[in-house]
Length: 189
Image (cartoon, rainbow, N blue to C red; front, top):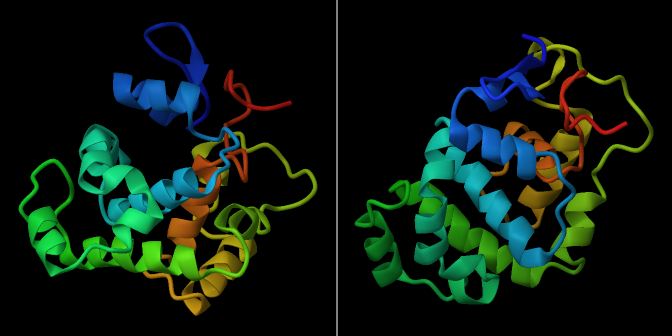
């Protein structure tokens, strides 16, 4: 599929026209450069929770995640213990998956143990140079050499639920790559 006009007449990547939540996310967040340790830790966690699910599910539960995970402040989440895991497993405002909850806690601890700041580490995998703007959704990869390298490095640093597909989705969401389709009003020049 190529960029198409939504009901509001705005030409977007086709997924951005499938719901108001997606349009808001597409227009104001997806593909915009994001920096900051806590913001990137949140996105890393949300991408992991999305694994196997639709992103719309995560968007609609995002505020619940923020409340449940103390604003995704790594120092706070790193202190979570068994009682917190039980609380999270009972919290319908988030995805109640024990492995993903444990990964969020593990990843908070890993963030605090990094020798390199998380922002600097993640952005070091952003591809350099220009690449051809995708014209259709089928032109967008799920995995790249950079996302494979990011996943390897994160796993070696103690992170969990950070495979190359999750890492590429993170790269897209945080503007490390710009996969807005040709013709989309958000496609950077």
